[in-house]
Length: 149
Image 1 (cartoon, rainbow, N blue to C red):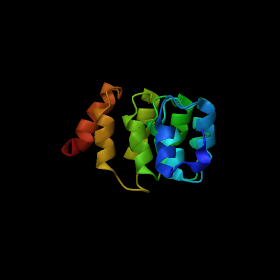
Image 2: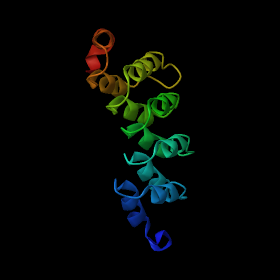
Image 3: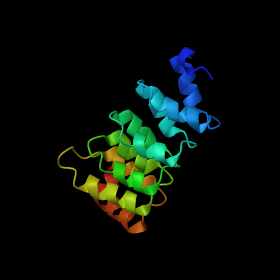
Image 4: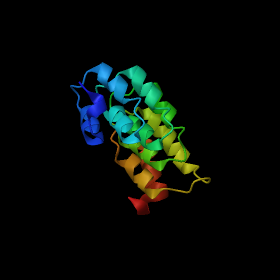
């Protein structure tokens, strides 16, 4: 496979393909184009060690794609909850079906105390819609933020 002669679109498609060999994904994960790294980060076939590396990428867009990945390990997803100033990453975590109750509750707690970045009604709604969010948290959301649901 000649990656050097592929266009960016071809590389992105390859990075998104669940059948792409791991060695190719590893190569694409080092690409200077953040969109290609992001496609690798979102691929459910990307190995755990590579997801860990991409979760620390300098581009928030790449980290956000790791947050969407249902194959990302729990500790990586939990680490991404600390990406406090990037609402898109936090929203991706809230939508990820693999995010644990612990992650969802941490996101909710952070949102309740969001004085630094401002309250985000969309985040509250996203958390509320997650079937894993405990009932008691849903009641608190209904009580405090019902007008946004």
